[in-house]
Image (tube, rainbow, N blue to C red; front, side, top):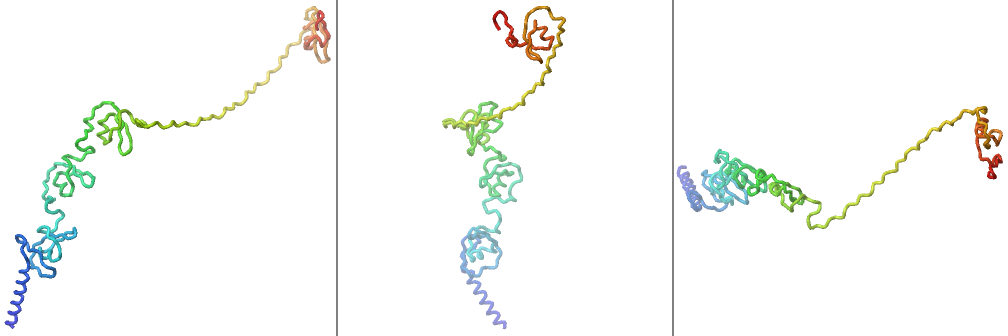
Length: 268
């Protein structure tokens, strides 16, 4: 039995030697690619390999190559690839920077932390509404020279050109924004329809009837003894009196002389 065991041990060692000889060294301490299905040494030297944009950790380079993966670097696959600073390696000091990614801006404590997160540093300092190169609001002069500026199809009036540029607007022309820009024909004026006021109907003013003026009767004995004939009309019809006083004293009202056929010098 010892002879048989020794023969099997020799066969196993021979096969292992053939498998190890098939690996080709491509660099210091790293085996080259091996064919699929071949046996790899049982050693733990982790590597990070990539295939079709995905990353995976293998026990050694031989295992990665036999599976059709391309070795990227030694060690387990980390969130950050070589060339980017490790988050644990970033210094703990405050030197803020403004970084950009996909059109968005964000402030980081320092450039290392921005690069770790995959952001591109734009400039030192916190992210402001205005980027370097644009005048700061504090630097604009306090003068009133109005301009009309435009942004995204909208117009707005600013006190001066500096304030417009600070807000990210593009100056169009001097002066306040008008409904019509210079050079454009004016639109026809909007004619408002006349406002028709309803007529004011005032109620008629009704005057109370005046009471008749009743003159006191004239005493016939007081009438003067003059002859100035008049014609009077009373309850009994027309009648001639010597004068007006007598007619009124009798309750008659004077009427034209013709009603009593009174002749005065040949005229009625």
